[in-house]
Amino acid sequence: MLKKLLVLILGGSIACTSWALQISKMGKDLTPEERAALKAMLPNEAPPKDDEFVHIPPTMDDLEASDLHPKMKEAIRRGHDLFVNTQQLRGKNVFNNMNCSSCHTGEGRKPFAGPVWPAAVTLPNYRGKNGHVNSLEERIVGCFSYSMNGKAPEYGSDDMLALALYHQWLAKGVPMFPDVKIYGRGYPKPNDPEKIPDYARGKVAYEKNCSLCHGLDGAGLVVDGHVQFPALWGNQSFNWGAGAARVFTMAGFIKHNMPLGLDTPLSDQDAWDIAQYVNSQERPQDPRYTGDVKETRALYEKTFHQHTLYGTQLNDTVLGDHDNVGDKNFLKPEALRPRDFSGKK
Image 1 (cartoon, rainbow, N blue to C red):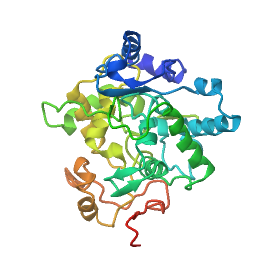
Image 2 (cartoon, rainbow, N blue to C red):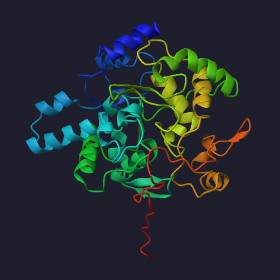
Image 3 (cartoon, rainbow, N blue to C red):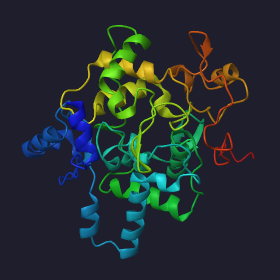
Image 4 (tube, rainbow, N blue to C red):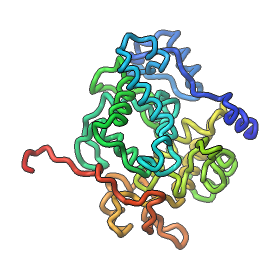
């Protein structure tokens, strides 16, 4: 079964779903036909509740059919291209094997797979991870700095504008600052496991369900220079400061999206165990590293690292106790800086 899946994926038979349906309404207002379509799109997910806002973004085909100015279409196309093939910025802004779409699957459109359009309607907003109000561009900076283990295109640059515009295009029809729950936002956390997440059980479950695509060594798969499956640990993966380094985030991604192409989802326990195993592996240093892993963990314990294994001991090793920054030649990009709106500075 898994070998057949790999052949289909590499042969191009499994492609991103371009859902023709567009929805922007509260769950209580969905028609029976829309509910049936959502069930077909997301067969393993719970249906929307009446008080949840449901948004299925427009497609690139919708963009071409729209009456937007040709230059707007060109910019949105560029943003889409950068989103699904961020590796074109390898060595300049990206220093691992990740694309934006590695984490935000389905072109950033798919519910329960980290859809990116909510960022366009909920930002600017306060973010606990860095302790200040963030813009949409700044949120993208964070993705490049942590998930791509790199540095983002410059604020206001053509590439940054294109990426931000793609997010905003996906949010077409959604009100700004919605004060309701968004259906399928992020990677909803699985139910609490019956047993404490376990490295050994996770290793067994990983080798059974994940290793065909991502490798026994977690290095992913690159064919003719093109990333087919991203690395889950090591120098070619996200660093210790990335959101995916949190065990609950990784468990949510696995539960709702993996194994790719298979109809039967993993159990909640397997998702938690695999997340524990994957996030117990070494990866490039957190860009906020002070030179001391325990000090760095303590600084960001409440806002982030309480949910990661960074700075904890596994067997005889303290995870993250190293100076390895992966393939880049810097630790912290300049764009990761504090903001102040008090008017006192």
